Image (cartoon, rainbow, N blue to C red; front, top):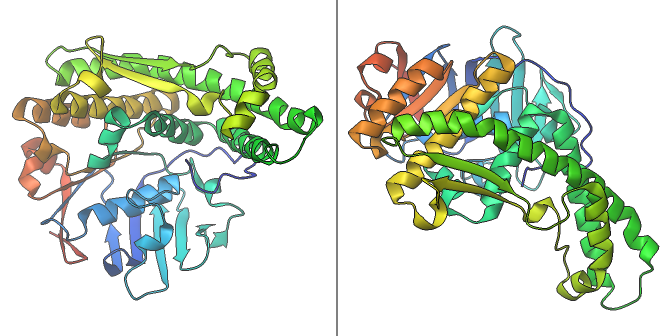
Length: 378
């Protein structure tokens, strides 16, 4: 789930800007690096294991508080060092966002040099849509991957959703602790009711927001997917996995199944068990989609997200494409390039050879080469 969400209050809504510069210090395989990005397309080329994905990961961290790979923030600190710093300046507002990662400590988020109370307070300040090989898990992975996709996108779009998600998670954790404790001793109903009321209240809001978001996203995904998938139709449906879709029904269900939940030691109803079903031509993509169909579905989902954010806010988010073009056949690559040209604002693309981006993007792009953790502008 999203990092550092506990006790998060509503964060300030701001207009996301483009990134004008990025600096890295002891992050992954970078010692000291500063890059001035173009306001349109940026292509970073280089052989594998040189640092292309690491650079994209730094931007992704600034936008989402998360790493692209690995579970522990300390994994991103350069070997032999105790501290890593990632910073970016947003054009227009000249706002500086930065993260400090330290061994043995929680990461710190800073805004214009001032430490924020929570790392999650930066969410929404830099809008970002990232497409990488790891995103295949959104389609072929377990339901938690698809819930995480929804939670990340909705939290960036809505401070209210982030708050509901935070308080819901805390309430579920507290109820689960009570459930486990009740195996050893009796806890009165009143001990559960305070947390069950919060689960029902925030859970109902989460389900409403997720359902509306999926309904809004679906037509954008359908349009993109038909272009890339030779006419195949993608379907998105948010599926509540129990009969407790409202506050009242969820509250009633939580109370009625306490005994069952005590036996299993966890809460068995609520949005933390729901599913986003992704289908291609009415067949569930996770089970029946080919690798090509799954990859196309992921790209359609992400490009639809970009289009939806632009539709809602008037400005497209930063687009990160990590070695995606080289994995596509000629038909899908041509259509993705067409979509990127028509829908993207600022974009950072990585590839082994810059030519993989195609002549139209190349003619408009700022070009960089990365070699052993050093980026040079061409």
